[in-house]
Image (cartoon, rainbow, N blue to C red; front, side, top):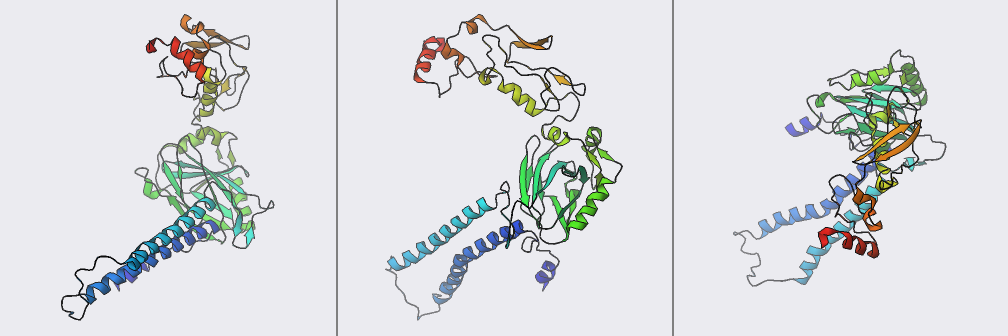
Length: 394
C-alpha cells in the first residue's frame, strides 16, 4: 500500500499532456514500451517457468544431457527480437523526423491541420541566471518567468542563453530543447487545452537552478488579448540597461512585465553584444568572410567594397550609430584605415607573399596555420605547383 500511496501524489503530465506535440511524443513513448514488453514479458515468464519445471525435485521433467541444438528454437529466439528491433527502428525514425523541434507544425490537433490562416505566435526565449525572459516581438512586450499563449495556435520559439547552458521544458506542451549562449535553437508546439502549466529548466545551471521555474498559461483568444493588453499598460520598458540588470544572478524571481522592447535587443543578446563597445558575433563573422579566403585580396591590398559594421549588426557605410562604430579588420599583419569615408587597405605583406604563385595564394591560411598547410581540395595542377614552391618538400 505504501508505493501506490506515494505514486498517488505524482502528476503524470508526460503521459497526459495538453498539447498535440507532447501527445504525439507520449504515443511514441507508450508504443515503444509496449513493443519492448512483447519480448521482456515472455522472457521473464519463461525464466520463472523453466526454473520451476526443471527444479531438482521434479523427477518427471525430461532429462536430456546430450541435447545441443534446435533449429525451431533458434528461429524463435532470433526472429522475434529482430522483428521488434525493426518495428522500433521504423517508429523511432518516423517519430524523430515528424517531431523534430525545428520542424514547423503540420497540424493543430488530430483532426485539424495547419493552414495559412493559422498565424504562429512568435516567442523569443532567453535563459538568464536564474530566470526566464520571454519576448513577444509581434506585440512589443516582454515578460520574466511568465508565459502565455492562446489555445490551438502554433507557437514558434527561438531560444538562446545569456551565459550558461540551460534547457527549456514545458512537459505538457512539447519536448525539451537546450539554450546556449551565442547560439539559437528552435522549438514548435501548440497547446490545445486551457489551463496553467509548469515550465522549468531541466539542465543544472548553478545555485539558483531549483527556482528557475515559471507558469505557462493556456488561454482562449479573449483571455490572451487581455493578458497582452495588461502587459502593454506597464510603465517599465525592456531596454539595454534593464536587460543588463536582469542578467545579474538572482533566485526565485517573481513574474515581471515590460511594455516595450528594444527592436534589436534579441539580436544583440544572441550575438553577445548588448554592452556598448562589444562587437557582434555576426559582424565578426562577416569581417572574417572578407579576409583572403572570402574575397579580400591581401596580396594586392584590395579591400572588398564593404562599409564598417556598428555593434547593432547593421552595415553603416562609414557612419557611426549609438556612438559605437567598428572599423573592419584584415588578417594579421594588415591594417585597415579610413580616409575621407573610403576604405583603404594599408598592407605590410612580406615580399614573399607579394611574389607568391597562384598555388601559394590558394593555400589555406589563418591563425595557427603554417605556410606549408595545403587543403586537400586543390586541383592537381595547383597542388603540383605548390609542392614545387614549398621548401619543406625539398
